[in-house]
Image (cartoon, rainbow, N blue to C red):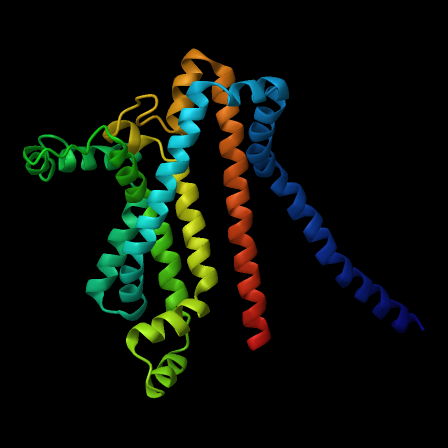
Length: 282
């Protein structure tokens, strides 16, 4: 009996250790979680709902929202159109040369936004490498809505390309070969095999691209300027609103936080759904 009792107590002690470790981990995680949550929550608590509705009807807020909605949709569509061929190549190539290309695609995500803005300005500005020739043709890019789209694309496109490349790489090569053997062309294999099997990655990458473009600030203000109704997106309006009208800045901040949170929820739901499908297949 004493041996049985000692064995039972040992098992109880072992079973209680994971619970204690979990509780300790939860307590240690509280400071960083609070650091993330509290400042965002304070913004919502600071905004008066009546004032929020009133600010939504103001011309400055309406123009900023409309411009952001329009440019981010164009940016996302342009990124999908131009990013899919790059993602296909990255999904298939494994040489050192293509690893450099892969690194270059990642570079805009870690560059300071101001550097991206300067790079775009000296390339597409009036006296830029490309911009000077375009100016002679009567085409101006810098400080226009086109510049907003280019700035957003520069910093946001890598999110779609990387997600799409991972999705394409996850398609079983045997499935592609089987479709080709059955007589499907390359386009048909891509359209009816690769895209459906990579759909969650494509949607997730598109949503992340849209969300990143929605929050773009640094490259836009340098390359496109901050002109209300022309190049002033929501982040730029927040910058001006902070100096002139804090209520406007808070209103737009609430909108951006809500949209970004919703975008992340969509991405995570697709990721979890894709994970469940993979578990069922395995």
